[in-house]
Image (cartoon, rainbow, N blue to C red; front, side, top):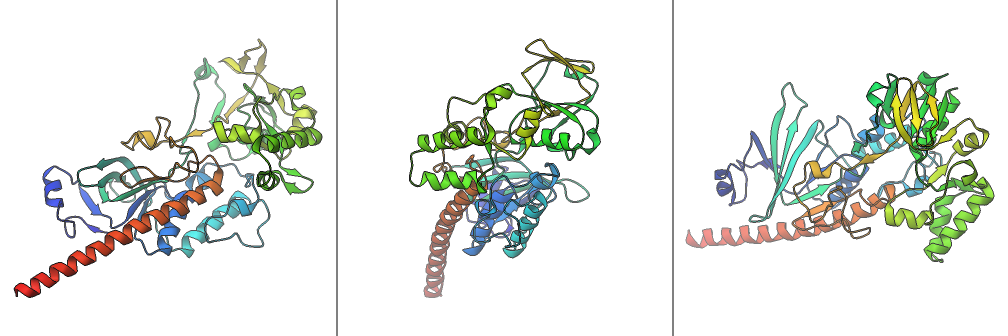
Length: 430
């Protein structure tokens, strides 16, 4: 990486005359990676192994900011650790099968140190534009790590989008919520049910986060009601001591997806019983097919369903409106509540800064489904958008690092040949 004013390709005087440069302009002899979560770190490690220089830009002040700053205390990995490790670096053997969030953060910190990855923290990407004439990306950022914000512009051949599917929280609008008067928070800001002890709490959302927050509230003597607007697949996390996910992966090697779905639903019925009886209607599409087609993850139950059966977690339908200290539901029932927790999910923030519409959709996810969504045109790549968790991100990271390294080595070879030819011409003239 060098200052573009000092060591740039020959076309840059032309670009500079077009107001191409900002307060600081940096030429990157390799890719710019946006995001220092597991996806960005995995790409960085792959490039490091192949000797390709790069920089990672991260808006937060740490790696894996989603895990460090926006997850609840009791969170553990939902899948066994072997399905969550990043390339070329297994989890420590003494870690449990389902590591805690703190153990996972420790693992990521060790990963970063092992591969000597040094992200640029407190640097937020404002825009990324591709200049087709010169085949270069212009990535504009605001760096806020010092006493005053600084505008920086990076010029690079390759851009890796690794901000993921969960960059921004989704906060739906509800009629009357501004008049509610009680405590309202998103699940990303929820840490523990300790401060909710004795309260009646409405949890909006019934995915893995909604279920776990409701369970945590129960364990801290709160009284949660969970809003379930649509159908949801609830599966046991384990079947006879074996991970349900691991079992599904094994069966998929030999059986068609529809049959694996059928077997999973039979096992779920045998272990959990009829979930519809308790207000959790199953979708008509099987859990794996639904995950593949709509990206909707089944709930892997770790104890919440037992609380639902016992009535400690109350299942309620959709919300009609809020008023002072209460919520009216679509079935006409009114609940008196003191707090609301929005387990309403996350979304990509890519459309807000990436000025491109071929690789990414208007929702900020690749248009092509896995495994073909990692590469776009003009040196653009996407990692961490597979809807297949950490294992999907790792597969994409390997593909991206390999593809960039191949191009980078070819270009470096060509430059060396050109320089050698120029050197020979200089000698002959001399």
